[in-house]
Length: 411
Image 1: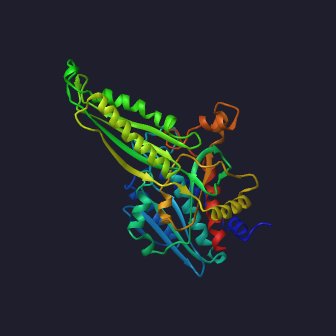
Image 2: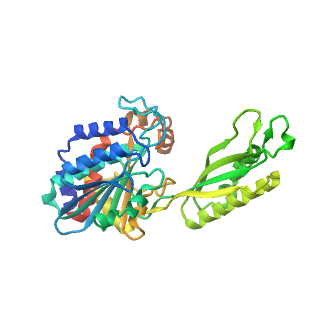
Image 3: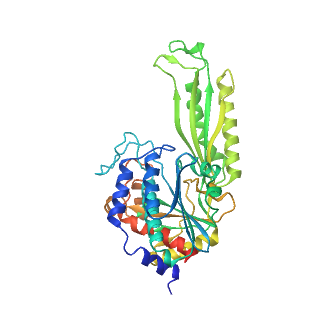
């Protein structure tokens, strides 16, 4: 038997303005904005929310948007989408490719906003079918881990209302038509670190008079790869990536310092702290071995928490999603190493459900090398790729996942 939430969701999304939503998506994709620069994006989303009857505000936490729709007694449900793009030069070749040099919606946030707008409008148009309060949030700066915390610090809940449940989703690679839920850990923690190696600069022709920080940094990059392979138990999941190494100004000048930026992905605080301690130890040891004039500086930067779905909440949402989208469409592939700042909206207290919607166009999936699912999954463009181009056919089911999830509490 289909639940009231599923039946109502199908009714409210039966006549979505698909063409208009696709145009909205294309406009957002052509005009991406980086973290905390999402002024045009915020205005576009706010305009749609206001037109649908929401009480709206912009500039929350910098460039955040919120829309409130009160509709009688009942729970308060928060629907969230992130808004920022990435410093990536687009290579999709799409007719609506980014028109901003070096900036691209390479993670699907434009798709998230389109679905959020569609869901907010559908729920507003069908308010006779539900009771409660909707808080719709367009969040800035997810990519830098700042946006959710900034909106909370700027009084999001005090200015509007504190939600009883949080709901969010993310585009992911994979054949169109699947919706991934995990009733517990679904995304990992992320931690950025910066290391500055200090040397003694000089002329490239006389290295014996210097302490070359480039050579030390190179040894350090290599040695850091042993942190996961030799210091973390095989049963634990962890990733260490060196994303940047920078030193020097000219071919024949040995610089006085080298800078290394790295990122950690972990699924527990204990593993995170053990990795940071190992990085500090290895950095200090390599600097000592090289005779560096001072110890390296190791600075912990942006940190994302683990995304831990409330089990009961997520099972409730997964059940209504399978009713709406069909048997066999909802799956649990376990936690991934990607990260989100969405949990900051929960403040450690509010239950939430966060899920993935697969978006790889059929022609891209079919053309990918390999015969097995994982072979193709590894071959298709993933999030943050300059060739990441979600299938627009996923707008409608993405709207339905948000609408049905909200109605699981409001219907």
